[in-house]
Amino acid sequence: MDVYRWGDPSRAATLPDAVRGLLASVLDLPEPRPPVPVVALPPAALPGRCLRALEESGARVRTDDAARLSHAAGKSTVDLLRLRAGVAADAPDAVVEPADHEQVVAVLRACDANRIAVVAFGGGTSVVGGLRARRDGYAGLVALDLARLDRLLDLDPVSRTATFEAGVRAPRAEELLATRGFTLGHFPQSFEYATLGGFAATRSSGQASAGYGRFDQMVVGLRVATPTGTLHLGRAPHSAAGPDLRQLLLGSEGVFGIITEVTVQIRPTPAARRYLGWRFSDFATATEATRALAQDGPLPAVLRCSDEVETAVNAMGAGGDDSGGCLMITGLEGTEERVAATETALTDRLTGLGGRPLGPEPGRAWLRDRFAAPYLRDALLDAGVLVETVETAAFWSALPGTYPAVRDALATALAGRDTPALVWCHISHVYPSGASLYFTVLAAQAADPVAQWGAAKAAAGDAIAATGATISHHHGIGRDHLPWYGAEIGPQATAVLRGVKDVLDPHGVLNPGILLG
Ligand SMILES: Cc1cc2nc3c(=O)[nH]c(=O)nc-3n(C[C@H](O)[C@H](O)[C@H](O)COP(=O)(O)OP(=O)(O)OC[C@H]3O[C@@H](n4cnc5c(N)ncnc54)[C@H](O)[C@@H]3O)c2cc1C
Image (cartoon, rainbow, N blue to C red; front, side):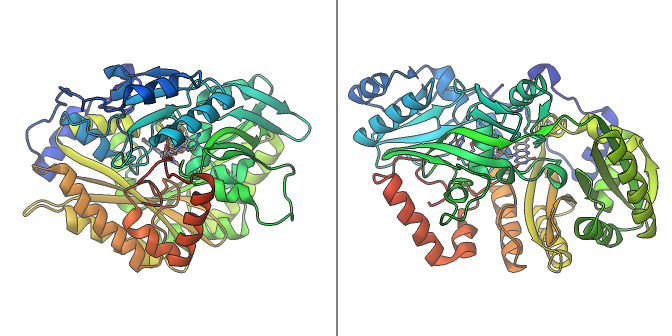
């Protein structure tokens, strides 16, 4: 993957002339902004004795510029903007590539003994600064790339569980499961590159979370290497033997240990899939219908609902139905009989709640394009557009307050003197008690787009906090959400997490600056 962009270069998107013209007229865009190549990396600071200690672990150690640059950042818009401006200040001094759990343990011992900061690197798709570990006060910073830990270790068809090494990417995991007739059903938009260990470390949510669950709900077991020893968690699906330590490691973003193995619940590959579109008059009505399905069913595997602006933008892009209102996508998966029966019940329910059936075409279009947005982001950045997303979750009773507060905070912070910013939103994941909101913004890039986004992100974070929502539903904390995280969990909980860190990582070498500051 090119460091300035997302994904497979052969799939790079170009903006249709009509869209470019429209954006230029609405947003008053600056001149196009192609990336400037990184001219020089910061000098590698790791002393020779540290490099030798790392090499003794048996892991591959790389210090070449290509390796350092490709581990310099995640894939948030700010990460891309910095690299596009030629800045790679966060590049690690070395990239360490262990081949198995034992080598990870040995690398951590070497880092602990030599006070080397170590940032776990899965697919490198973090969008919250989760790969921007601090290096000050350490002998240097290494990226621990888990790509070589990519095997399926065990598949238990009776219990329907599979144990993978943590560096396996999601498409490879699905490929390996498919040969045995199973699926994981975890399809985040970063699916192409993200790893199972990264999903566990960040409590990721896939697009089919209503049917298959969030990633943390799929995890039944974890093996975790820490500087002080190995944790092996999850000997039964559920247990009343004290607090569930798996939950402490899920979402720990590499600050407590390196997840080396993940055992997940798997499902039979669905025989039938039926994705349908529905039109509602407005977002409030569509939100109520979404809540009705989340609470009383029938619950599809995929359930998403766009606000009026997102619906209009999608219709423009797809050349589809642009008759206003709000689009809901429902994706049914399972046996033929179950899908057919659910479709009948869903049609009854949604038409009763004000939905107009649009048939399979909107569902087909959504499935076709569901991994395309990150490619489009690169084309928009090239054209001088600032494009980024913000996500949160709240209880249903709070959601009608959170939605306009965050939308308006973003729109106000990003509007130019004479030009508006475009902000739209969809409900992306649902629960009986609430849902997540996923906002997308488009604005003309200012002279310093990183500072421009920083101000907008702060406004959105404050609005999220003020309405009682969470600072992240599925992206995690990293560095970018730290200003709100401490207040969200409170000082007592922060002290608990610090206590755990002191036991597992007494010298604080794991991901300094991430999650706990
Ligand atoms: C275009 C795009 C779309 C996205 N869409 C979604 C989405 O739909 N849903 C969603 O949930 N997220 C999404 N994300 C965010 C991101 O993909 C997820 O956070 C994902 O879980 C990260 O996985 P990764 O393997 O890339 O981890 P990385 O980005 O490499 O790491 C993420 C964090 O976890 C730590 N870490 C990684 N692996 C391990 C390990 N084995 N042990 C301990 N710590 C580890 C890292 O140090 C870092 O702090 C998206 C990101 C992008 C760029």
